[in-house]
Image: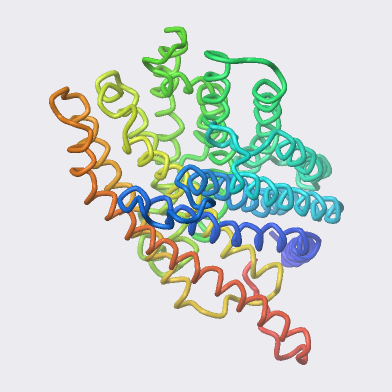
Length: 476
């Protein structure tokens, strides 16, 4: 590649960053705010499991409401806003096409977050449903669907008008995620909120939506980030890249059917349960390919990973996806389901996928992208290192404690001679451990937020300084 070509590509990349600046900062700032809110409510919910009297005098802080606020804040606040910032940036960067609809994206982001704020208020006031991920009123979700249309149309326009016609696997995952989400989001809203379905149909639809929210929305964007940032930061090609499309199509074809494993022994047809187990086993294919493509690319350069904070987040997340795929298979076997179906082990697996895999990759991605928007490097490497240590240690303790707690809980629940009070007493130490780990996670999130505020302050100050004194980011 000639020097002129490199200069031209760097110029286009700089224009892309500037064109996404306002919308990208809105999405990123909103994601961080909701991350803090979700962490606080999640901590309150965890404390109430072993100290039921905690904040019992406040109606807004009952367990059902705090847990629902935690779920919605993390899902629609942190996760979706992070996806909008990272996914759109990856599509634009790989397509070498600057964003021409930044105002449309910005308006969509405002409506999304205002709608979510109103929905969270409704939950705190008791205006909520009993369905996980769908606790807010239907009107709130309709408003969010409209706002997503503004954002999603922008994503497809960027992809359609791209200058670089080659389609990379990270680009394919990102575009697919932006296509799949409105499909299952709108279908679930229509069936659950605007048709008179009850019983089995409602249960299957709700399970299908919650299952796809992770597998067809969070997972493709997380894998897009892994396939984009890890080789870019390592400056090495992906190992056995030709296998990557097989991983993508196996995810696209099989994951959605895996909802049946969540409904085993429930009031649903047996073929749905069986297809769920089979589909979950077949998810070993994308997990194995991610291991070969991404993790084996990293192994020879592990020292480089330790010295690069962005790589540490990304590699931790990519490795967690492989672990998630393997544990998902074991947890869907009949013997495992008989023990762990209604225990904390399910939450452990959920935290492994939602946080250890997806959120850690989003952290690393935002640490890479945000300096591009403000043209200033992160002011505190100490806070970044603290964030990584607190997040990696905290989520590991959460996953292990809940997994052990769930297995013990399941074994005791299988014994008719053991009282529920005894089970509660035995599981208390694990829940207390989880609470301390959540405190550590919250401290990491606060350090991330504080570093982000410092980044914005430094970038604003730099605007009023002479050009020679600006600390511009040179990494493309």
